[in-house]
Image (cartoon, rainbow, N blue to C red):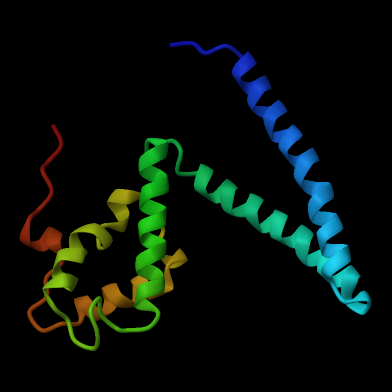
Length: 150
């Protein structure tokens, strides 16, 4: 199915108009609210925030090919929530593994299937290592081998 190039032009136009409306307001707020001796640094932080946002957007866009967009945003948001949750505890519900951890394995353990680099989520990565270190643990593919192609 072909899509008109006017969609690209319209989307770019809306992005530019949004930037033209937001940027002067943000610049004004930063210069008015920042203490006079650090206005320059605060302007740098304002622009740094924009560049970090663009960088994150670019990283997310690299997943565009492998996931429908609504699913991609839901997955990254879920990973972010779990990442923050695991920052305060070694396992999902506290200091010891529970059934909650076992149920989360199905969602978080298969990084090769999702294409999401768990290195971007260090707390989840550390959690998967703690799970793998449990007595009697086997990788899910050891228990349920992949189907052979063909």
